[in-house]
Length: 400
Length: 177
Picture 1 (cartoon, rainbow over the protein chains, first blue to last red):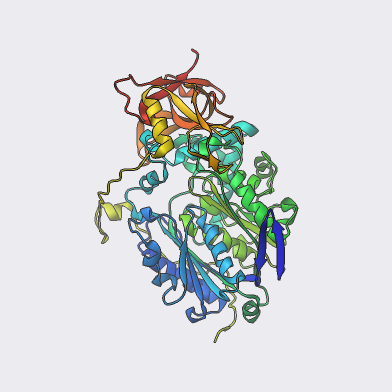
Picture 2 (cartoon, rainbow over the protein chains, first blue to last red):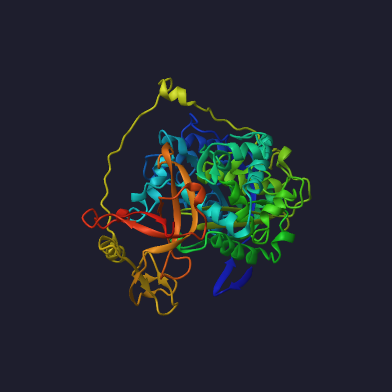
């Protein structure tokens, strides 16, 4: 048992938490399968990898972002059977785009607290149900009185943030585009990828303008898909494998909804969440101690922004590391080796598949063609969402 | 019973899923159900924002202050979220400000192309604390001439047209030139 104190909070866990299996479906725009069917496919794969059956699962956490995408309220209940949640404790959590790492954090609570020894975490998103475009559903995240009369598009806030980030650190669009080039190329090795391709910086800079500086190839696509993860107590992990991957730290934080009242150049919500996760994981120098990272990359500048929030780069330094190749799969700090959201796709909550699941696969040396070149011990994954103010972080290690 | 043992799987081993194309749906080649929900909402503006909107109707931008953290905040709120106490009073701010960041948008809320791009910005309001911005539209300026740090001024609707909405400010224009 381990007790730590951070600004009045106690991290007090009953038992350690290991990950022993993961799964994900292909990610595409408009999959013929329903959300339940997609969830089933992901769960089936995770169970198979762990060597478990559904009977072994004690509790289920479902992560799925807004109901608006589906035009179906109480989506957690709708997705229950495909998630293997029938007749056992089942809950749905969501914090918009942050759900991809928040759902496994909720799974961690279940096991760390001792309430469950075997917990299944399932994330599902079907963005294509809203026709013609999920952007129309995003209207409903804006303040109805102050923002919506201006006819906002969600891309606006990212464009505003990207411009501010470029301005404060004097960063060129060329440097940001390198992230899109890297991640889309990494995704060529991912069997689930939607928009894997070899592109150049010029392709990004010449792509269709959306809300400048954001252009088409700076953005990840809307997708459908599902992912699953199995978290277990140490005595279960020992029965299943010689090489479990341990969750060593979790963190989450939200910044104010008054997002125009803060300087947008730095993601404080990620920094706070990372601080919490690193304290738990005893990581004091993330740049040195983290071997592989999956920061949230729905936009290319966001990977850079989040690397800085995660302390993997100093403020304004992430574009330099990217340009120098440090973040390549064979670099010193492989970043988004999965191909990320930019390359594999962006089914909001199901992005757990390229964040939490990918770090697990990397640390378990099961990532196949995507396996990073260097030896890995510790990895971090992170997600972000809501009205751009939530940060969720999880640190994992293949050493206990 | 558990622990059949972990299989040697290189993940993800399979990735089922049957994608549909836009055409499949447009040409009704696949079975689907169409629904156009007609749900209407009437939101409360709340205590603070109601007063703010009434101020806009009079052509004034109102903020609030917290004596504990010393912030002058806009949009106004009834409590300081940092000090978690009631605010200490109202202040009238200028209808000028500074562009903190901006974007030139070619898309509408449904991601459809706009006939003409519009400029959207976060504008820090003069008289409020640092970085106290609101999101709004810029006009009477060419996209290539906008820069971060540009001073701008509100262009109001005429008194008769104002209705107590954020759109009572038509847009913001450069303070000089």
